[in-house]
Length: 635
Image (cartoon, rainbow, N blue to C red):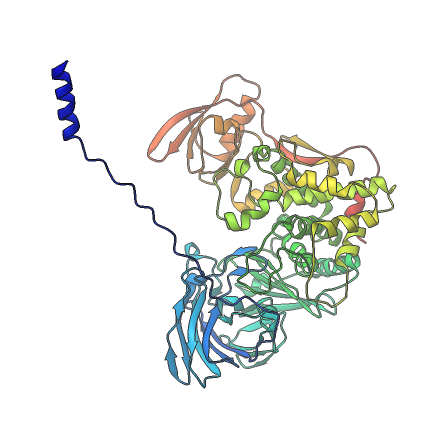
């Protein structure tokens, strides 16, 4: 006993000393020294002189002048939160060669340690003008971002090549801009301009309107007047891509006509569709009051008969002139490009625009009614096979522009993406069906569109709204528990996708073994083989797995994005061989045997699936003309 005590004492005496309490630092306080935007006039003027001629290297060079500045501390901002992007996507990483001078002397600038889009300077006494030089080094490869300048075309967004003074609503900052383009280029914008050779002088405006008035310019150009106020300005990689037929242009004219008939107003003095057709410049779909940036791949006109392709783009973006630009969610509107945007009402901004984009494409004939129905089927099937709806409600997806900024997701069906677009469409179809039912066919969502968006012809300011404003307008059209319905649809989980609006309007979702022409066209455009609704995968042309449905047969077999199918039932992979194997397995019990390459490993996988090929389509329920038939009819 004595020996044990002695041994314990020795062990204790040789153990590590008792440590002092861990250090506990305190945070350095965050002090916001950037002036908040005030609705007061900026005392001077911003002048921009931009050289956009370096198409070889994709460099824009800006000489900016700010008058009316005062001595003392001043903050200049690079636009961060961009309208239409709903997120802080200003391309600050591409700003270079920033020099700020006063009276010919260089001023030191300091980047704000918290908001890196802000630059602090001290303006010397007696100085009332600043000269600012900067360059925007646009992407030259796709992995750097969207390409906006090629030898024959460019897209100029003013927010990417200018700084603006903090402390003012952007609508209170006067601005005058000139741009020098390459020789032989023509330039188009919603902002009026006068050309002198290769230099365009733009009408004096304010910084908010300037940023809302991008430019598309290029060597191969053609313009079509669609109405007294609206033009289609098309730029392409080659002159051959401008070969639009009279019938194609007539469909675009009908788009304008149908939208104006829907809303009874136009929220612009003039409007320009800025359409680029290019395999070299990045695609885009971005809304503005008096224009839209619409970028598609080659074939918009020349492959018109292959299928609808990207022709929903122009109806969607044009509708935003009313929904999104003119009427905007109150928490999404901001006085400058620094204040964070909140997207809780994007299911109206984007969801109802998605709704009207499909309606207007059918009413105008830009896309046929049948192709529109087939497009709807793809939307319904996608959301009706989305297990993420079990844990994440639709309104939470309005945060995705900030959360993911449209970066690819590995498991979209289990994560959701920006579902407020398409699920918003489903909700508004349900609203339409209820309006029709409750009013005995006297009311429809057309009545909501005109009442909510059709205010003040020619006004391209902004009128904000809240959830209660949406409900109040619906209630005035047709009494119903709209608040209860919309709240449920926005916040529910665990329920089936809200496809009842289509069912109530005369169409139901079904699956067949043959894809629709629209489905085939989508596969061709995306260069994919889409077997989402059978084995649960989408593949590129080489058999690479580009998507896997959560809890699908492929998922259960351990297949994931990035894998490749090397062989099918002992035969080298082809989409034809895989489809044949799926069809054969429908009448057999043996699994489909796939040889899968995952990283550096190649191994067989037994795929248990016996449901055959499945492709979504809409099937008319009942006879006669249903609500959806009436909705898609031209006005």
